[in-house]
Image (cartoon, rainbow over all chains, first blue to last red; front, top):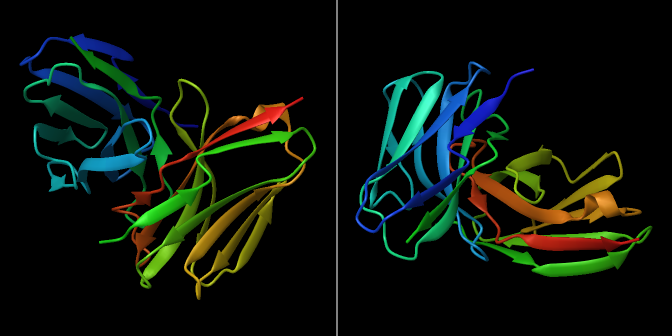
Length: 112
Length: 113
């Protein structure tokens, strides 16, 4: 079976800092996603990518950049971390847009 | 755009009882429906997904019901056990394209032994 790995598991940043989160999958899935999870708000889509070098904005893309340089990896950059920000960032992949998602275990971000 | 409401936000049941979680959605073109389980400190695990041509699906103690007329999706855990304690999310998308899943806000389920 395959695996989807997010690094780091925990990330502590400072206000204004640029922070990068990484996601790798070995399912050979075409589509990858970044979601942000805040307590009591469900998951909100930040960016997704339907193939290598493709990027599509989600509902929450402002303040973030993403990069899909290889089919197996999808990175997310917080361009300027906001003080007291605390959230979990979840990466997912699917075979294509019609398939079920597989999620990584998340990166927990705290900005001090 | 699609709006999804999920209830209840918290649910506590005794071991062996059933637990029911309900989501309502707004877009009549919604055609893909799924339920995920999130254990503490982990990502989301897909439990079950159905397309709009399915009204009922049962697997391993879980039942998903879809009422398209009322735009309501439910998850029933029959005979819950402590290992079912987790946060559950519904997620839906328009058409049968999973590109942009819209998630409910989650239900925190606690099963007391």
